[in-house]
Length: 444
Image (cartoon, rainbow, N blue to C red; front, top):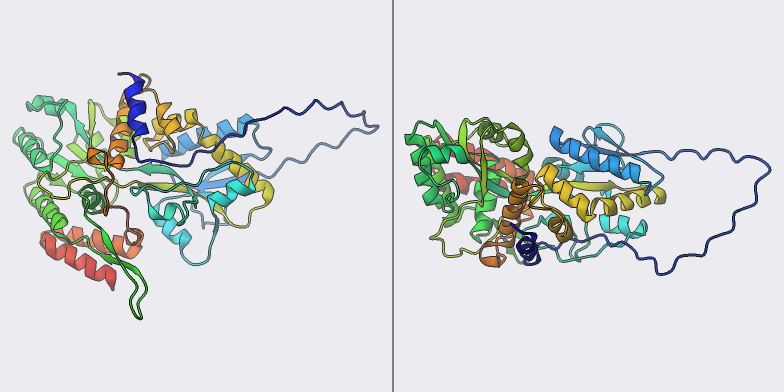
């Protein structure tokens, strides 16, 4: 495998993140004459107060972030050091920066403004930063209407399908040709079940994978925009109870009853069930790869999320979401300069490539992806390439209506979806009733 086709793939990708631009020295300043020796020795400069970066990341991702911070501190690019702390952003004094997951982000953004937009940080820190149109697979909170970034989405990932190549081989399935349709996956799961595998398939984050991303993957809206009316503001109307979503969840419900599908929780509880070998197929975020790679004692394959080939609006994309870096409001000019330099440092191509290798997250710029050598890390590279292809869209075209919804990040919407899916798995409600109920509850 050569790097050239991979670079071409990225050039065609819809991902268009801002890249920190390194200023070119037009002319070097003439060397200054050494200052005359002072009669008295200067007092040693007081060491600048370090900047705290708080996070609640898992161990492997925290280690990758520590490696990045250590490299920045050792680079001498700023007089201030950055120190990591494993804590919630609101547990004590507000840190200079915080890495927030979806739940923490919703809490952080609620009420008064607690952050300085990243675009402003870069401007005040005198680091060049491009404003761009945020592509439709990207989360809506990432930037304002002018494409100015609010935060650095350093933990972006999208759902993919992992599978046990060894198990596929044992039951006569081709490990090099994983199922790409839900119906052909059903046939493969039947083969695994008949061969004695008790858990053919499991899914992490069932609502995110099987509602949000299945909607976007088939170009079906999670919510529709509603124009302003008399006495009513413009907004969104939830629409994830459409025909495609009902059909898909009805299929998942039948799989659950047939013991093809096992659900272990609302979050990532399914990931260790796959990496331990108990389950043979897993849909989970691409960022699950480091943990799977560390724990799995079998050859792991990665493939795109399956789709329903008979859906009319086929061309779609999956969604990117994940942890993001936010800068707290009220920081000094010196603090903002250090933070801006850290962001520029983190966006250097080699560091983006290493970040992707260490975490399974999508690199934040094309240069970082191109720097990710398939020779050095073919498996991690494969995960990134599958994720990028999904974000670019099947058929090379982005979806028109299947982009992220503002409502999808609402904790009330998430809770309603989680609870109604649990009612579906427990066979208390059929698929349509569960989705109708989730829409009704979330809208109240």
